[in-house]
Image 1 (tube, rainbow, N blue to C red):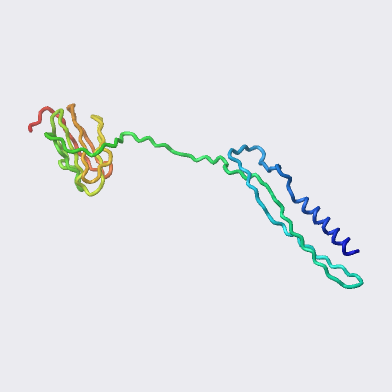
Image 2: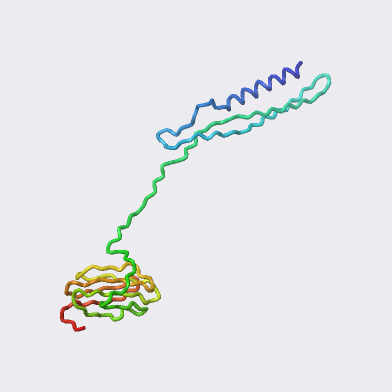
Amino acid sequence: MKNIFGILALMVIASIMIAGCVQPAGNQTVTPGTTTPGVTETPMATTTPVTTETSAATETPAATTTTMSTETPMAAATPMGTGTTIATTTTSATNVTETPPAPPVAGGETVSITDNGFVPQTLAVSPGTTVTWTNDAATNETVSATGAAGFFNSGMLQPGDSYNYTFSTEDNYTYQSQESGFVGTIIVTSNTTS
């Protein structure tokens, strides 16, 4: 009789301990002061083994081992997004124009971009002349106006690519390659002889 009473007492104590660990359904843990969109509920199941050894001495010595296993379901709110802000920087590219490679213009003038610079470095043309730069160098190059006389920009010219620009106003136009630093000049004047 004492053995049965001891086992019942242990079962009651174990039930009280388990009941204290169980969180009622619908009760969610929420961090105060924050609202997090995209919160999802993630159920987590855990197994809590309860092992109790009870030894009782009676007229006939006997050892009793009682093992109880219970599964305790737990629900917890797990936020999936925490509102992380990613800073981005927008760089405005000025004076950069991507122009597809252009074939040389018939009747115009040509300038070759070599591994040593522009050839010719200085070129005199009459108003309305189209000048074609061809990248004959082994690396990428550009043709970009540097003076106040006018604006032109070839964008990146890979080896073999060409760029055309028509000079309509008399002036001295300086330019350079932004990749290698080579410089050149186009002199537009009506006093040229072709």
